[in-house]
Structures are given as structure tokens and as C-alpha cells.
Length: 498
RNA sequence: GGCCCUAUCGUCUAAUGGUUAGGACAACGGGUUUUCAAUCCGUUAACCGGGGUUCGACUCCCCGUAGGGCUACCA
Image (cartoon, rainbow, N blue to C red; front, side):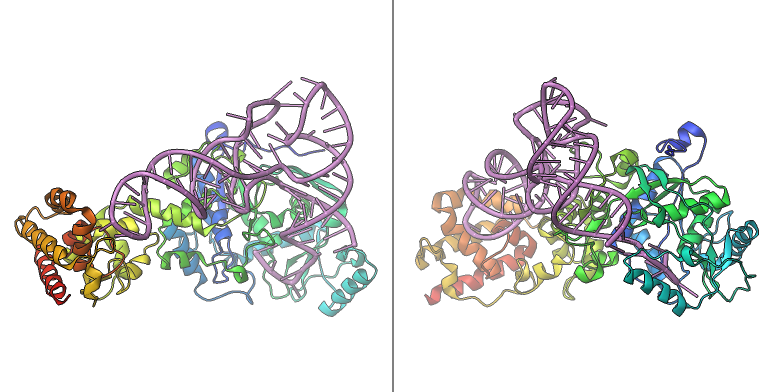
């Protein structure tokens, strides 16, 4: 028999009066993988789309892997992206704590229930003995199944040995996944897995099921490595006589060459590294949302609110995708372009060199240009560095007088004439209305008659002394009238040397 | 070894039996331009292979192939 979805996978809140509850359940390992964040995002979107509840649950049942400060790290990562939770480590729910290490009693209670039903027993073997069974099976090219070694009679569990689950019925399981459809697995997928470890902590396999039950989770969103273990979960659901939630399996995020899953060693970054590099949360969120999901339209740019509105389980993809930093850069550029001057300044502030503050007039005049050129916020460092496109702002670089001559028509005498005329025109401009537009407007007629290259190249070089820069009008505006005229004077001196 | 999942341009993806296989990033070319960038316009580029089913398959089925995952007192 094939299980059908228990409830409509979308719009449950609206249709069935059942409140959608999703959760993101990371382990505190100190690293927030981009794929984990994608899982969190989808869980969040599904909950919010249905006016449901999103829970952040910390699965800290493995003391060896735990890294101090991880909860703070996880919280910061999610907050940065605007993925906020209704219940979390800082905010217990009606079901109690959202930190598994603080829920040990609950797992004990359910463990006892299983023992009472005859579905759990202490593992009588030493780890070495179990390992031996495993090796034997491997040598015989057989799948290792602990249940083949299940003791005939069960001892009383005193808590010092691992507590194992006794699979109620060995059978082929069929189940429904909201993304993958009908799935199945053979009997070898079932085994007497460990419920509670000898250190008293539950395993993931056990704890997450109890928590999802207690927290009334309706949809489990998770990566596809859990498909294989789903029969185990189902057999546990059976033993506990509870209905499983809706399984929503997300496609994996692979390396760009698709040779393997994107891991730390393949350059997978912690999500907060993107913040450090100057990516906006909107851009990261947008890109992530589009890996493994899309609205079926040609829309690419989505705000968080638009994502919530558009998100549908049916549009989640089955095949694995990859995280493309070039596209992230494009998204980032889009979002930076939309930033107000004030917001741009606050984002840029930490990357600014010491000589430039966000409150300085020069910076304010440079903002539109910076905003246009920056791909990621940290780029402002390069752009403002001595060799950067706006490096000339701090001070006029040393340049040779020959550079003042336009390559196509190198004429010192003409250049002096042009620069003098340019100086005269700029001098006549009012400081109040000094803008790149007004400067261009004033200079343009002369530049057109005398030749744009002849006039504008020497001017740009006089102001910047460098090969690459914005156009001379912008440069003059950013420098201000006084500085502009000073630099032109210097250039005129240099030209006389020729 | 066993079990499971997946397969459209280089990348992210659309298509749910009938399309000139669409969009985006990247690449390339062009317009604009004193330079670089930005911007605008355009071009190149894909149904993993083989069998079925069907009047008709990217779409459904089977077999290969390739990739991924699980096979822990990790999650």
C-alpha cells in the first residue's frame, strides 16, 4: 500500500485548520553550510506562506562534534538573512526548550514507552563486538544488519548501554514525499538502530522524531541524504503509533562540476563569510531560493516577501544544483544599485580607508559612482586604494607630463590652450550648482568644437593622473571646484616642461 | 558489496505528450564612450545513450551509463 499525503502539502492553514509548523534543526558544529541555510530558508518560506510557525531547533546530541559558540553563530547567520524564528534556543515554546540537550527527559519518557511495548532493548555487545559483526558481513559481501544479532532475551536497561530500537516488522516500506513522489526501500533499510547512546544522549534518528511530534511539526524539510534512513523513521513512527509528518526532500547542492556534494574542502564557505566579503543578505537569500526552486516564471529578483508569496512545494526541484558565485555577484550588484545613499554608506563604512569617512562631503559626492562600480561591498577598498579607479581622490598620483597628451593627437601647445580654456569655464561655475551634469553641460560645446579627446583626456589626466577613472566631469565633481582648479594648475605647469 | 535518489545550454533553470526547447548568469560581438567600468542591443550554446508505449516523446516505462546519497553510540 502506498501512503498518500496526509494533508494537502500547501495551504494547510487555510484549508484544513491545521497550522503549518516547520523547523530548521542544525547541529552546533560551528559551520553554517550554504546548503543548510537553503534548507532553513525553504522551511521558513513554507511556514510563513501559510501563516505557520517556524522553529529553530538545536540538535546538540553529539558532544564530540559540538563547537562552542555555535548557537550564537547559527542565530547570527539566520538573523543576517532575515530568517527569523518563532521558537528557538532563546525562546522556548509550549513544548519546552528548543535545545535537544535540554530535552533529555522527554526522550527518556519515550524510550521507556518503547521498552514497555517491547520495542527497545539494551545492546549487550561491546562496540568491538559490533564492529566484528560488521566486518564479518563485509567479508561475506552482505549488508550489515545488527538485527541479525539481536539477543534472544532483553536485559533490563540500566542506562549504561546503548538502547536499541527493535524494528516491529521487517517489511518493504513505501512512502510519499512531497517533492520526490512515491518512494520505497527494501527490508535491508530497516535495522535495530540506537535510540539512546551510552552517554545518555539520544541519537538524531530518535530525538528528531520525538521533537517533531512534540513540536507538532507538519512538514519535515531536509536534504536528500535522509531518504535512505526514512524507512527507519517510518518503523519508529509505527512503533509509536504516530502519523509521520509530510516529508519534503530538498535536492542537494553540489560542487559546480557536480562531482560531489559541496563540502568545506571544496571551498564551501560559511554563510557569514559572504557577509564579510560584502554581499548583501538580500542577494544571498535570492540566489539560494533559486537553487532547487523556482516560480516557473522568468522573474529572477525576489524580495523575502515576494519569496514567501511565491513559494510552493510543487515547484521544488528534484535534481541537485550548485551555488554559483558569479550569479551571486550579479544579484549583489542588482541589490547594491537599489540602495539609498544612506544605506550604501552604512554598508560601505567598514570597508572605507581611514582617510575617508561616510560623513565627509567627498565621500557623499563619490557615492553614486561607487554604487555603480561595486560588485561586492569590499570592492570599495580596491576602488579607493591608490591603484583603484577612485584612488586619485585621496591625492593626485605622480604622473609624467607626457601622459597629459592625448595619444591620438599629442600636441603640448594645444593641450595648454585647451586646459586653460577648461579652467576658465570651470572657474565660472557656481559652487552651489557644481555637479557632474553642470560641468559637462558647460564644457561640452567647447569639447565638441575643439575635439573631445583633445580637451577631455588632458582634463581627466590632470584630475586623476591615472589611466582608468570615471569620466572627467564626475571626477571634477567628486574633487570639488577648488581641488579641481588646483590640479589643473599643476597640469599646466607640467605641460610647460614639454 | 547492498539499498536509495537524480539526469535540459559551461552554470541556475522553464517545459508536466504536440514549442523554432524559453529565461537568467557567464562567454562572445556590437551601440554608447577620452580610458576602464556601468548600461543598452544582439549572438553562440542543451534534451546522457539505447530500447519500448504512442499518430506523436525532453516529458511515460524498461535497460544501460554517469553523478550523488545511505550503509555510525554523526546529524
